[in-house]
Image: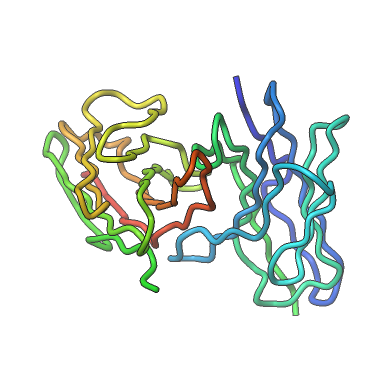
Length: 113
Length: 115
């Protein structure tokens, strides 16, 4: 069965520090992979997506993610975190098509000024 | 361009009651998916509607049902509410065209509390 794991429930970083959020997936075929961000009281916003091509994907707000098939991972990175990046981050895998999506449990990011 | 909208924002119901949640798709989109997000968890796929028919369903019982209308708006109906149905319900719309599916956009959600 398809699944997504995010090993870190909560991460705290200082403003200006680098960030890496981990994501591992289980899926038999070539996956569609996504990272979403959710601020309190808000819906989900797509940060970036991967479904083929270059394994390093650039997204919005300065985020990037790297697809590593051998490790079944799709980790999210940002070189310098801003206070406004504090939110819940969800990794997700697309099943069968682009828009039936299985989400991970999320990682909550706190940013210290 | 109008984004995905959902109504109501918040709702409180009693166990055993029925509830209807509504979603208006983003302009130009023809597919709607519904997700349930319990507190502290990731969203879980309930079902998807395309061309007014159910086009895939997650692991949810039949008391969760839906409709899609000709204008591509959608409803999620839940019968015989249980306490565990308390969650944020998210609607997402996308465009399917020429066999390809494009990015889905999420609404702000409806917070349902069952007491």
